[in-house]
Image (tube, rainbow, N blue to C red):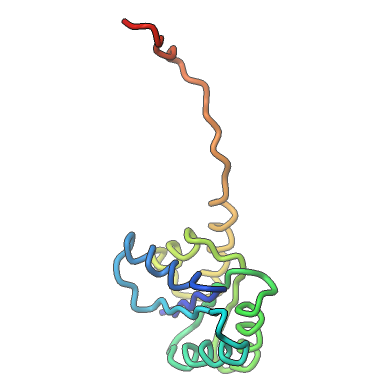
Length: 141
């Protein structure tokens, strides 16, 4: 089973987990690492490292921002933990996390590919479509 680590600036990751619990219930394989303004990058690295060491299986790290400290530290740890199968994705959005927990995909490379597609497909712009019904008049019956 893939362990999912969500990381990001501020309380991004713990907020994502709170939303996930509301929709999908408790998720024991989802871990969070917040990068608070009081944290150093070394502190962030240590928090991420602790979560990686605890994970028994494959690991998927969802980071909020490409090039940000949570992403960079995750990539460095992927290189450090050569014995673990780790994938790191940036640009994490909630539909990706929801899919990661509900899709039932066990292999981390396959799961990463599915989440990239999910992320791209989840971004849409609402557009009102024309209705076949007339709008009600405001001047009475």
